Amino acid sequence: MWRSIASNGITFLIVALFLMAGLILWGQREYTAQGPTETSVCVRVPSGGTMSEVSRDLEAQGVITNGTVFRLGADYTDKTQRLKAGSFLVPESASMAEIVDIVTRGGASTCGTEVVYRIGINRMQVVVRELDPGTGRYVENAAFVPGEDEVPETYTQVRAQGDTRYRVALAEGVTSWQVIEELKDVEVLSGEVAEVPPEGSLAPDSYEVRVGDERSRLVEQMQQRQQTILSAAWEGRVDGLPLASPEEVLILASIIEKETGTPDERGVVASVFVNRLERGMRLQTDPTVIYGITQGEGILGRGLRQSELRAATPWNTYVIEGLPPTPIANPGRASIEAAVNPDDTDFVFFVARTLDPKDGHNFAVTLDEHNRNVAAYRRLEAERN
Image (tube, rainbow, N blue to C red; front, side):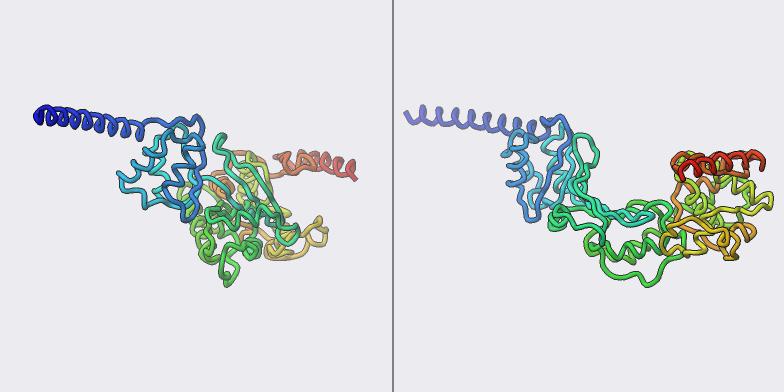
């Protein structure tokens, strides 16, 4: 009898061990198998959240098939206590193992809500946007101009969330004074900037920032990025340019930046100024005159007067020979690259094609051709008036 009981017990134990082994193998396969999602998903881990809470949320969203397997897998790989707060983009068909790695790896959030402080030519706009995981595109939820518009409740709400991301974006062609003035209204930053950096030394780009970052450190990052771009452009410049240094490249690039808002025209506009420099012709460009008036501090907001075109300032290229002494704005990478690699043309004149700057310019080789283009533009002005 006892032998029978012992035999049955051993049999039961063996069966149990086989079942346990099978269950473990099944769990391992489930943990590493492709997930059920057909699109990317944004997973939000709140500050102080637990792996159990995350697993329940993922199971409810249909991102994982089994919350228990998810938790056990995280425990087995010693990642349960490494959970990081933030919003993380989980790609389609991601396995539970991949998801655990994503939410415990750390680093900046890769999806969710983002606040962008866009420093533009005229003013700064604050935009609250959210990444749509399905399309990979941002959806704008709110926007306002500090000091002019009422602050939307959406902005106040996302500012209170610990996983909101922040970004400062500089438009091409902004002046250094404008950047420093607008950074004062970026409330997530701290500290002051002692002085306005040299004109042209800040790279128009998008910069991710964190709450409490110092404004001065961000400005240093902008300067370092611009120097990197400029150095690479100078090394890759074409032969025979009438530019003696990277600083002169930056000056010419700033003029190109202010003269055209049409990306495809940068190389042609650059060729006009290079041709003029090579022939000893004055550059005669209105943005340099405007800079001589404003010194980059604000927008002129009106047309130039004839007296201003004739007035002698260090930047008035209707009066001075060659390049002005400094850049007149912060040029972007494309304008810098156009300055060191202009199109090969014979053009020495250009004038706006229509009253809309986005429509580009008419270019000319001879003064007669240019005068006809100017006359056509004047007719458009007269028709509008």
